Length: 239
Image (cartoon, rainbow, N blue to C red):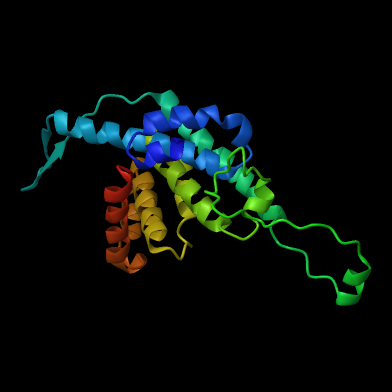
């Protein structure tokens, strides 16, 4: 129900229901990523709502152009801190799963014949949503054995970079965004460059920030931007 509320554009309600399932799912990185997504969606909605309501302040630049600035009301720091901690929890769990993810090589046939037979179970039951439930609960090591850890890690890093920037922590945002630059996913790669540039601007290094926004430094910028806009329209506000 929490995931459905999140996808339906109700992150506050989604978070309430997700937190009820913490005793059952606290060892699954997907659970913490979903909670972080609730925090991201709530902050993005807060920014969007206040941008429409707050008037612009025009600042002269000394050139022909002017800069328009909106001053938004403060967002609760504890909400951003909770979201970043959720991301860090997910990354810690993913690191533990990565350490045990590689499967051992298959034993020779002769040795296998001598071994006692034990019943086997599928790593992911049919119809499993991936988040687990009381009827399909399984250890995360089994749930993520088939792969997907790289995608989970990218999602956690994207959320962490967003929330760190929102919480005026450009150093943490920079560290998270730097890890996204090697992604082969165009959208993740694009967001990595954008968040690196924003973090560097906050750190007072605009010259370095411009390098990350150079078209030659990005991979399939138009495709990534189109995919990002599509995800926003489908799943609600996000950065």
